[in-house]
Amino acid sequence: MNGGLGVRKTKYRPTGPWSATLMCRLACSVLTVAAFAPLASQAQESRSTGGYDVPHSGNPLLPGYFADPSILRQDGKWYIYATIDPWGGDRLGVWESEDFANWTFRSINWPTKAAATSAESSDAMVWAPSVVRARDGHFWMYVSVGSEVWVGTADHPLGPWRDANGGKPLIGRNYRPGFHMIDAEAFIDDDGTAYLYWGSGLNWVNGHCFVVKLKPDMVSFDGEPRDVTPGHYFEGPFMFKAGKRYFLTYSDGKTTSDTYQVRYAVGDSPLGPFTEAGNNPILATDPAKQIISPGHHAIFRDRGTPYILYHRHGLPWREGGPVLRQVAVDRLELGSDGMLRRVMADHAGVRLGARSRERGIAYRASASGSVDGRLPAYVGDDNYATLWRAPAGAGAWIQADLGRTRTLSESLVRPEFATRRYRFRVEASRDGRIWSTALTDFEGSGSPLRLPHRIEARYLRLHVEDGAGIFEWAIR
Image (cartoon, rainbow, N blue to C red; front, side):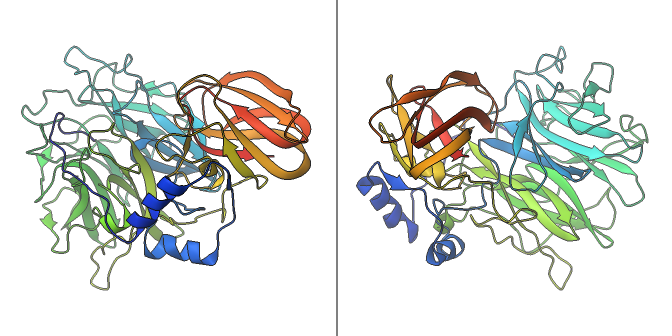
């Protein structure tokens, strides 16, 4: 997750065939733009040139800034647990979906920074969850809080969760002095035996990986932990098994810069030893596609096909800005030699359930203004890499022209930060001149935010607080 702070970041400048197009869009765009369906050429651009602002892109998978994802499927639903950016919150971000396309933000009761704190804890927030279902039928979470590893359990993916180790960390901050005791990842082998991997370095150097077999109670160590650090390891271990081979995958580099990447080593046992593969890295920064610092991943299968879920920098990425990462998913392949192949990361993403997200009625968007090239059309482009940002000052709004008068029941708003509270007011009009109030003083947090407004109108105007960012605005 975070092996060091205060590190000089590498300078990154936009390159590749997309850069001139993007600069023109930012300089020449007007405020009224259509929320449109994709042309075939635009869809091809997303795959070939990697333009991140192409409508209907599947990556990022989630609306908002999250990192270090863990994924679970249970009873026909998908769950993603993740660090809340920037740099973690006092709890985790959790997303739920029935179709892997439309995600709803959920809150869980544990862990919290307050509940998972010991006398040795650092001020680090809640990071890097790993959630598995063990052979006992219960769900188990291993999570980094205060530079320590804590463990909790629940009977349902959404809880209620409870501490499983008597209110103390499973792995304390000083368990191995000189190393960072974070990024724990549980692995359940085919026979139901559980193993725990963890470890990072300090000040972005000297990362070490430890592993231990767990007893059936999922808390007690069955033997002494082993140091199984492979070459170029820094943090974020994840065990993946294919056939009889054990692939220890992990991250190297700095997540705050453009050097973060995914690598792997191979062994014949979950306890190692592991030998670094020769075709590393398998996932790294691609400047031409604007894929920056991918890493801290999870690997899962759907109908037998493996996929890699990971975070990468939100775009456009600027040196010195806040650490705002987004979750993406791509196909993971094994070659004919049984080794992992390089991930062909892009912005199109993959579809595992619904072929598209729910988008509502098409409309043309305009706004009172925008900042930093965050255009009003972005609220209707079905792309979580882009958003509209309201200008500073009172009276900011964004408006939808639906083409003709329609019966409108609600708006679904996906704000920039699902954990923050937002205030909205909705106005409606048949002709764009005479306006009436459709919803007054809505306040809430989450994603999507459902704003009820049963009214007949052609125009809908969403009043927002100054500086608010909106990824998507769907109207029904």
